[in-house]
Length: 343
Image (tube, helix red, strand yellow):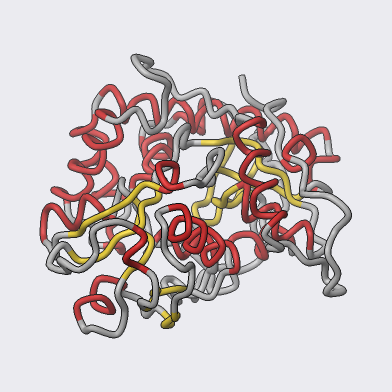
């Protein structure tokens, strides 16, 4: 599932991705090359990329973009090692990787409000609030961040905060329906929509309603800090982001056309057209990418909301350095993210 994949890139989907590094070199006509690595199988988080690619927005911006499928090592590791110039990730992931010695920067935030939900099967009548997760089995990819958030929700609701864990497979729905787990994390904009379309029905809780501060789901694009030191890369990144935003704006204004375009362009993913369109409808109706009433994706990172969440995770002991020691302070959103490359 996308929610867990961002926390721990262990789905193994598209694991043959990568190839050689596209180091941001230019073509003979001055067009700058940029390689972009997905975090998971194609979904509406990526629709702006496919729209911009198909409608020529990248070409108009002077960038030649190659979209790479997800690597098992994760987009973050791929960007850090120069296998991809840009990757899809989250600010909380950047915090974890940089604490371990990486030098990543979030330069675009697609999701302007939390989209993660914590869910059990609707058939589980014994689970009414997160308190009822106490003693149950959490379907997890092993991320400390996930466990801290689950524990906070449970105790906030009056539970013990104790639970067991089970390793998620490639299909979290199947893990729950098999009885091997009781609750898990899902994204409202994808798995939540899939549940409504195809089942199984879910009973979900929003983290912000149960004691989780800030916005844990600032999902967007990351680059390597060293890559940004090249002035040509900075220029190319600005053009790339402007074109991608134009693609997302098109998807907001023309959700059916954008959905059809993505399904046709990302053929290997065999996307369900109904799921893509329903996902876009959910994104638009809930303003997940925009502020209320807005029709334009800004891509701006909210440092205050980000810091509130990072402080919460730090106090819970989530972040350790590559030497196994606790940092002197929480990761700082102002150092992990930048809005400087947005038009």
